[in-house]
Image (cartoon, rainbow, N blue to C red):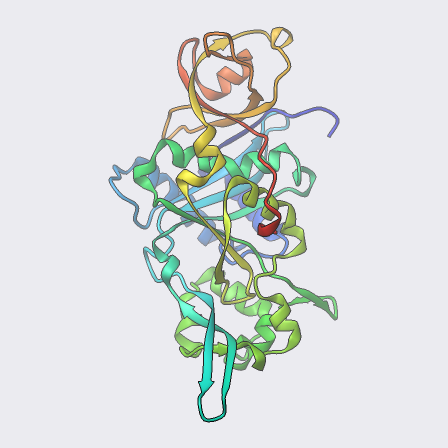
Length: 358
């Protein structure tokens, strides 16, 4: 893209259904929580609209679906969602990595064994999920805006969300005979289902993942009994999502002991107050100025204060000596704000990732 487009993150509307279908179908790899199924996507938009209209005192089974729109082309180029409580409708299952100790005094042996145990500990967390972005915009500021605008929404309406946030990443896949397969699924789930990874992934997207936990064995899985390929895949993100993973770690999320029950992809966790966006964001009165008069400044996310008409855009973090945020007329129009109205803003640059988190 030769010049920076005018981008906005906003709640999904019924007119976005075809775009959501396209984004679901082109997600790489396919996302369980974003099925390429028109009825499910239409239901998601309607649930999101109901959630935005509802009076909420604490998180429940609400879902908030957002889209990224390129206003220069009028095209919806991305989508991302929030599930207020991951396990509100049914338990949100993961595998938890654990260490069991086997010891024998008679034999003078002490042996540590790595295991995976079914868990629903993450059910109470708010889940950042279902992100798909047009390939032309990946690993750009548009990518960051779509991913992190959800944090700007949570920061404004904390009563609607849990204090603990979770974000799951697709796991490592291999290509065999021109098909994407999961080494972890082949070593674990395949033994209990007469379906390959792609089929079961699609089924879970249309139905739910709970049936997996109902059929999978409830006792711990001993990692030494899995194939080397399956063990290597545990907690490993899909290469196409490395950029997103790095950004969320820089934001303040941390790797957890939990992995996906399908492909063993990593699950990151964080408490809101630990995140860069929450610590650095602030309210600023708006001052509208022509584009050419704005000083150079680092890019920033800027959001309005409207729940149902939430808007978040990219702008310069250009402040006056009195703390006013300078916006162009176009940016102010997109946000629906006038001179003097307050907006929430946070600089886009993130701190470096601690090497221990990589």
